[in-house]
Image 1 (cartoon, helix red, strand yellow):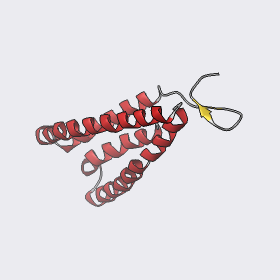
Image 2 (cartoon, rainbow, N blue to C red):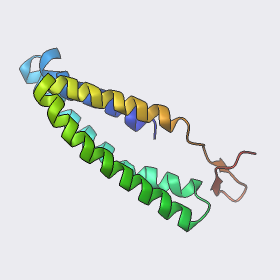
Image 3 (cartoon, rainbow, N blue to C red):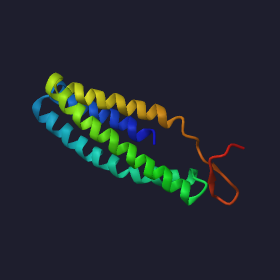
Length: 130
């Protein structure tokens, strides 16, 4: 949950500034590699859902948690699309992707606050401390 957003930080920065930091031919390769990493990170959200399962105490709690996460993600995505269009138009794509990169770092900081599951003798995890 933490490393994916750290990688996303660099992906966003490279998307936004590849043309400024690299020669054109290298920038194209960097953006293509970023695209692949971005797709992999999108699929990594399944791992987050599985992790939420190990932390939840019941199916109802898991359903509520995942539903809340999807709803919040949708609200942020719609808002950021509108704000992102304005930022792109006003300041350029570099500032937009830099903003997204720092949002990824904020996500990493928040992920550090999520409790780590403690494995019990039966191999099942719980979020309760010993």
